[in-house]
Amino acid sequence: MTTTEAIPAVKLTERINRIEPSATMAVVAEADKLRSQGIDVVDFGAGEPHFATPQHIKDAAIAAIQGNFTKYTAVAGTAELRDAIVQRHAADFKSDYKREEVIASVGGKHALFNAIQVLVDHGDEVILPVPYWVSFKDIIRYAGGKPVLIETDEARNFALTAEMVAKAVTSRTKLIILNSPSNPSGAVMKPEDMQAIIHMAHERGIWVASDECYVYLNYTGKNFSAGSLREYKERLVILGSLSKTYAMTGWRLGYALAPAMVVSAMAKLQSQSTSNPTSIVQKAAVGALKGPQQCVQDMRQEYIKLRDHVVKGLRAIPGVQCTLPEGAFYAYPNMSAFFGKGGLKSASDLAGKLLREAHVATVPGEGFGTSDHMRVSYATSIGELDRGLERMRKLLMAL
Image (tube, rainbow, N blue to C red; front, side, top):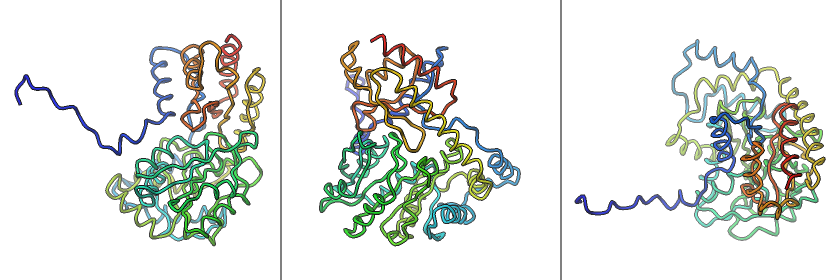
């Protein structure tokens, strides 16, 4: 090629062009950019606990380093960790899994990605309730699947029923994704609704993936896992994470409970991508799962106080409507009353204005499949909630 010839344009794969960057990660990046300029940003965008990782978990990691537990492990995780995951889940939810039915991964998102890649093929349909966590749709598309969206009703607190799901089923339905407690809405499915959906799917030979990242942050009175429905486990994948339960987001440790055939396939895929989760983190995870669990309850009780505080504060702003989230650590207020004011046309416009002018980071609802809402994380202190709410109130009342 001579110097006068044009350099061919870079052509990326079709599969990478099916997906978009994470909306939540985009907000984090923009907030960090403002902070680097010396701007004080109140962060309601982050999807992670504000608590420190409990000391006994950190001690387990330090002991692993001191003991030179720093080599490769089995791809799916050590036998010790896989047994700890199974035992913890059985103790808390009366599930019945064996070591060969669990895989540890580099975070819950990694477990989800692996599961969808081994279950969903080109042209398969995947039923996905709206609002949905930002990564669900893109991971389905990356696998070549087609998301089939089910709109839930804000007036019914985003409830999902078996009847709603059954109407969306076709001959091409391969998988149903459930997420309870929900990110972003905080909605919690009634156990009887979840069981009815899983029963219907089992009868029709459809897989169900239950994302239970926030399963221990259920404020309705009793935690519930689809894994307790033992009679349906042959078509069920439970996706879990230590990130939210034990304030271990940066440690990156998730897992899947599934039939041995699915776990084996996920391990094969994982062997050609990340291999095993970090050895030191695996020891920390064992410490979390087998150690004292009071920290889980303490954090849960604090989140309930924070939830009540932020919902009260949001509802006190004229024009803001907000359902009461029953789990996770997000409020999902409806902000449509402000569209058409100050040139605002969408939740994205409003979130951008809040960040640039009020220096409050939120995540617009478009990333979760709804156009009227924004996600507000209340995983922070009461003081930060009050600072952010006051900034929001001033900006919104000035429109």
